[in-house]
Figure 1 (cartoon, rainbow, N blue to C red):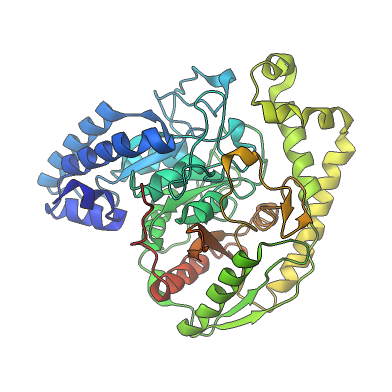
Figure 2: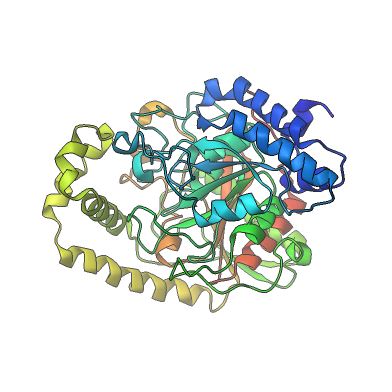
Length: 469
């Protein structure tokens, strides 16, 4: 099978083909390594490449397959975001303070991926400490969007989304504390799934986005995300927030459909300013759920806007994490961060507690939406990918000034609530830039979000759309 074709196969197809002896995992690894050599100099997605390790693992998988061993992700190349611990492999968090940090253990999800037969290809780029929704740092530089190399892939899992979109790997693992899986997935035209808080256990993470962040998959198909969730979800005593096992396979139940389900579409959540072309594409995409037998209604919602609280949370937690090394960090920090540090001097513990109070107010508002509807649909971002030179993003949308998070107002509310959410590719702007539609599910209804995503994928397939790299 040609190497180029192997690069664009799904994880489900690869694992089944390898188990059946129809595909060689050695060929798969060589194909994706070739793709890395072709694409990575242009997009800067993979910052640590495990070339020889991946080759050795592919040979081991091939021998196991010949002996009849079967694993759910047999021989599937996977990348890991560079703030997730990988035993014996440098993990920098995108920061010069951790430039030479090599963990002595794997994150729980990395343990599970290895046990499932996945091949760890390398680590992907992120902003320093994954704090902002673009992907740039002083260690590795900026990641570029495969659809337009002058534009951002979003963040903070920008390297992960760019790698999947460009055919480097079928699966990338990222994490999402305010939209960091969904935002880059939308801007790069791939599928990103943020599980419910606690669905995928973690431990020993840096203490930022506390009780907000979920690890999850970025893929080119919904089935691949379901496969990954079968592998990495489930309880672990090392994570006191980890949820009980669901008792079923996400992949096996993926195609049950959404007939009779009720979808609410909100173009703005009551406070957002959205680029008209993005709103038009997402509204049209939302209505297509009717083709799957669901009911779709555009609704007016009025939920609290916690943009200020999100900034307070991040600034307070990162300064607390750095502790007495603050002055040292200032000398090596990503320059954009320095403008936020004066805010830290004005914050008190009362301000931090107020964020928690506002979080409960948000949940009271969101909960009422889900008393009537099974799913909430919104744009994933208010704009498509913007030029790298715009830094943190546009300060004006459709002629209206917006705050620093104004272009990404739809994702972080559902980190505060802990609900499962996904970004699905739903079309392209006139300039050929991808746009994402967000699906938010009821609390703990990860299966429902995956099923809704799959129903949309059947009606509006996106898999064959590839960037012009």
